[in-house]
Length: 150
Image 1 (tube, rainbow, N blue to C red):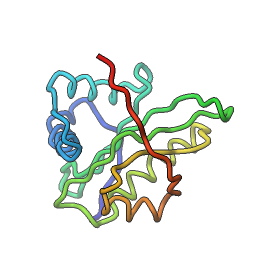
Image 2 (tube, helix red, strand yellow):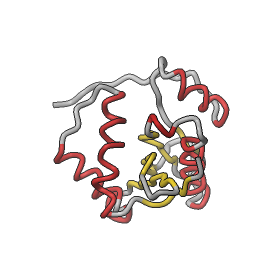
Image 3 (cartoon, rainbow, N blue to C red):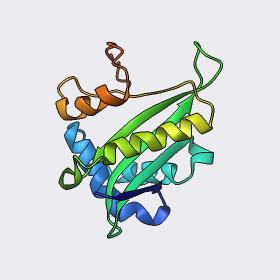
Image 4 (cartoon, rainbow, N blue to C red):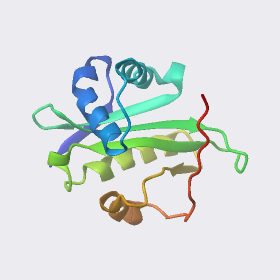
């Protein structure tokens, strides 16, 4: 499926929201409307938030995928790291190279900004995504641990 990858725009909210909800549903996380609006606003103003958002748009103008990332300093390198925080493709548009194109867009931005790496997390049981990730990135074998704070 041919798509265009472009920066998230303020008027994308209504089309972006179902993708965002789909992503959160996959990870069994509720979609708080206020937080969704804050997240979208942050993505539309990377100079203020440090967050970047891109969407995949099909030839009919429908948003069919999203990716969000942010940059942060590292204690291991002089250059920043790029954390690819969220990646989602509409289930009806999968297996057409959209996720790969979204990852490539983030990687391009990271190169442009001089970052030393792009990294992300996924569930160990997310076999479909991991099949792609194993092709485009290195599995570090690391696990994530969390402490939730009130």
